[in-house]
Image (cartoon, rainbow, N blue to C red):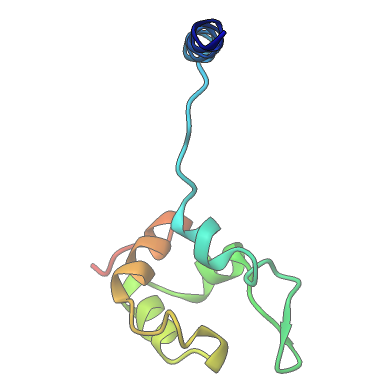
Length: 98
């Protein structure tokens, strides 16, 4: 019986690989930011800016990163991760400093 289960599992794995099923890693924006920065979440009586608004608020990634480090308490767990801010800024389309 176990060999039949193994053959079935192998056949399913082959079928998925032939069907082009691929795992795509979620972006850091999706993992760390999108849930609150959706343009709908309210914090301190203000709507938290969404991706498009953040893109227009900041001239470059340095300005974005500095602002993130001064963010409200709800971001304390992320405040000291400058590499994360740089990656997220790049993902959402904020340009590098010139």
